[in-house]
Image 1 (cartoon, rainbow, N blue to C red):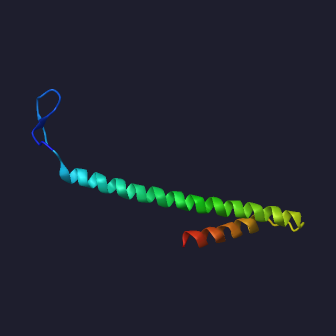
Image 2: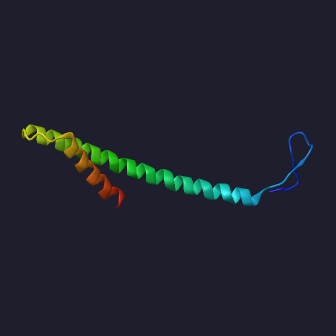
Image 3: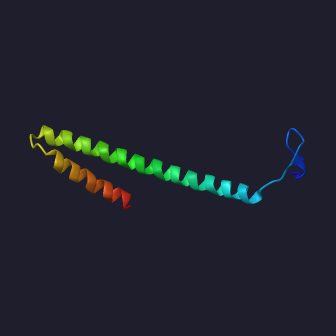
Length: 85
């Protein structure tokens, strides 16, 4: 690429900042990794929530009512299992 470029008005020289370009490329790659990890964890959380909801339905059908506190503890337990995975 030509390093003697000028701005559109021809008043100053535009120099490439390779270090900044490398940093931005690296930042974008890291951002993509975080975005992918966040998406995976969100999928796990949705799966856990769906599972907990289905268990609530099963428990209610059997007339064994669980307290909200018990359901919350169970959900937290499974979230910990997946997040520590």
